[in-house]
Amino acid sequence: MLSFARKFVALVPVAVFCFALRPDALNLTPQPGRMQALPARTLWVWERPEDLRFIDPHTTAIATLDRTVVLGRTVSIIPRHQSYIYPAGTQRIAVVRIEAAASVTPNLLSTTAAAVLDLASAPDVAALQIDFDA
Image 1 (cartoon, rainbow, N blue to C red):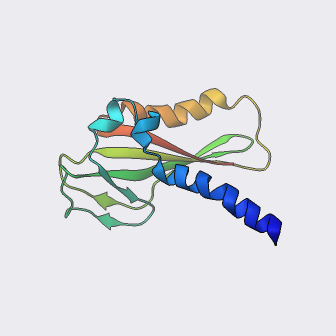
Image 2: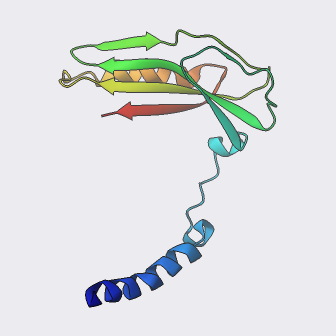
């Protein structure tokens, strides 16, 4: 019982320190750049039909699942199947999900990069998010 009390007393200052931290005091604020130009709120739009005409493009961006890239013996691209509607002027973040099979053939880097990076130059894409499942 005494060792528990000692551990508890030792952890109290650590907990107080953690709650007192401010991200800006540790310089954890993001660097200025492309992402700061996006609205503060983002709605994620996954694989189902969505009608987002109600959102305000000045306050809300959307992140849309654009495709899934499956790595195995080859690279397979599964495009989004469901439609979505959003107001003009909405900033869109294209999301690419990468899934790897149990066994992945080496030397797929350039094919995988091409399957992902062509979205970065699309005129309606403000940013690119890559989700990788290992």
